[in-house]
Length: 541
Image 1 (tube, rainbow, N blue to C red):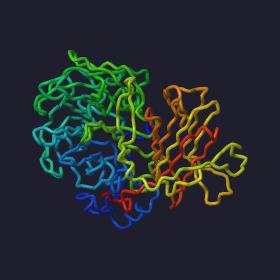
Image 2 (cartoon, rainbow, N blue to C red):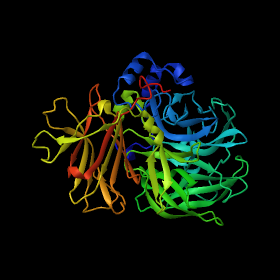
Image 3 (cartoon, rainbow, N blue to C red):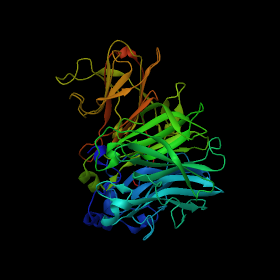
Image 4 (tube, rainbow, N blue to C red):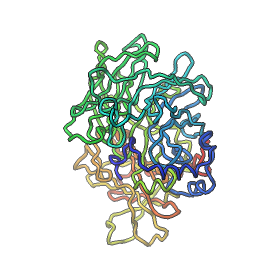
């Protein structure tokens, strides 16, 4: 199932299935998220496809990162969560806390729908910020709209739901952010007058005195039918009363209108806007199953964003990201890594989705986005293994020049770095299943990479052509994080590719790097097993 078919707004299961899944849950999970029923816990604990060093809840469905923030000496992460089943629906805000953004502890649910309130049918995505020593959530709440009023009142119509979306506020002074107080009325109850929107959600406030010295600016994801996506811009002096200004930025679409406007590009969701060095700004938004970044400038007089460069934030299974500042002021990116297997499989497994490892964002001297894994992830490394290459066993399906790395990655849990000096000889690297019997040929490629000096401006990953720009004599650097059923690839910190891979049975495969090309071109090849952040794949801390 592709991401286009797995939109985050789709309710994937009927009421009977949700009730059956809910019956399995220990009520304690709803309060402290620290336990699951024994039968389900055993299945989850023994599922080799569950990641060991990525953040995800003990069970059930998760999606968008929400409101990541550094507060009171700790990092707090919230994300979309269904407490009843491993499918989308009944959106709550899950809460986890960390001191290093790598090791996490589960906390009580932060936000839940209020019966009869403006978020009665879901607490959708949003942002956290601090004002007057108080943490504020600004988020989207949704209510179902009766069918006879949907055309006039619904802002979200995706073929499955007719929802009224409003922007809401909740606050907390709790040192651990366990308790929250909701403002009963929306802070932005309606879209701008005269604008027939294709969506109205995912508020992203920020403070930047150079642009607006009196308070905060706010971006909201939206769009117009048959025109394209929009980022709507608001301002406020107190976070409660907001004035609409105009579109911060807009796009056009040539796509045929789809039932869900996100699929056609007529709606931009999960916008994020922030300054990032060199006097430039970055805009991120999600649409058509992809995440786009644009670097450019915001005109101080008119508050309109003008892009200079654009690209994809990740070329694989990655969606609805959110950024934050760490304690040192670095811009950190988080993203939802969805399932790509059939719904029936992830629903039956009892879990779905995970958070990407934290990624550090910077701008290069060319004002293009750079993306690197958080250095703190290195603390998970066990002993480094410098790998040598040996010929692969002969096989009719294997190229004669195929070389295998001298060690395997056990339990599909580790890190691999390959640095290559490009030459006239084409280079390939495959992450493959290393069968127990070394005399058998390799099979089951989980990720394939191709690079050739004939096309030096691109690298091909799983048939996806990814643009890169290597300076003269600059080596090609491939940095892999492999975890249970996910691979995150960083290419020269210029591009990323996230891949989900699945396999049958109760055991994770051992993974080996299979390489073709000039052996002398490979200047570095290292592997680390990574230490799991959880003893049982269920809890973290």
